[in-house]
Image (cartoon, rainbow, N blue to C red; front, side):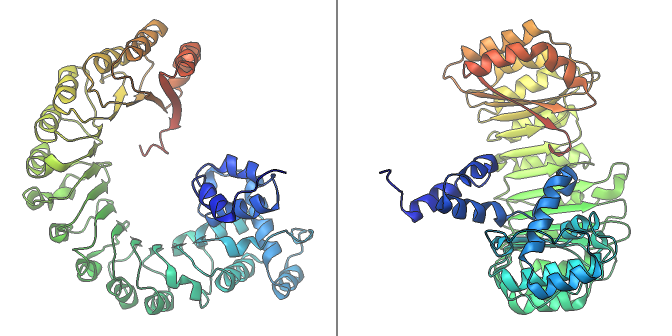
Length: 472
């Protein structure tokens, strides 16, 4: 008779498979116990997905399961208002709704909109009411008013007392923020989209009432502003370790950042074309953030001289630097002031190969780099040769985005992989091509056999990734 592992052991093992959904799906078919454990994990974050990358058949399956979990009175109500056949099904094995730990109102709205035309508001409210009654411990809630286009009545939700992550817009009904402020005091992550210049007191109270806020994400577009919320934010200046600021041309002040003494990660995303957007960085360049490890400029970037001074004060502890711009002095300042850097992305121009070499020589802890190749930028062949010869011993990940057709031949690629194979100490190289405009396809078609050969040898781990998912 086969030995059955204790339930606690199986739970522990399956928890480590949370991101490996294909394996978890296979576990559903083994036996009833494995199925029970797997399905709880699979449905934990079932509603935390991007519907634009989800197949309609999968969306329908999730919606069908949610409808099946509704109480009978809700089913009858919906059936009488919109009988489109979705309710006609055999009883499901589990109450899937009770397993959910994340809830996204916009995704529910979009999901329903694709299958219900006459009663989508009613369906949305019944499903959300079901979640409020059945989820005993909600961990993440996403609610953007402008994404829903629904008059949703958010119910009393006792399971939200354990909420740790909130993503919302500032123009939600005051009652929503008031209810959360009464029961949620341990939010660790808050993300707010601001669409107006004024902020209601209920949102301010919710932010002020938190005990250990660590992660803050603020977006201000189309005339929106976070100015009104700054006093509530700065109450948490000693606990916040991660800060992201997103805005368009009408950016408001971010000078409050200087009070965040324990900041470990700082990200800016400001639209290209508005040079005045970084006026506050003139002062910020002199502030010392002794614990800062990650700095990202995802779109527009401050003037190079400001960034250079900032790196002089804060570069020593940086582990990751990302700038969607390039200046030769910036590249050299990274080599000079960021000796402990592990991950890097800046745009090297066609005549800046010496800067890349200098960074490799100076940043001996560097493990990962992302490089644009093609017209106006470094050639792929140059990158291969430089990585093979100059990259430090810890280096293990190379990401390349082809802006134009690659200049590297199959022989160049094989030579690079062969050189990597001979490295000592030997390390598996993660080699990723970022998909862009189809330029990568021709290259991959001609190089597939070489890639397969060195994957089988255990020299490389190859992948492709869409530029949007890569964050470009």
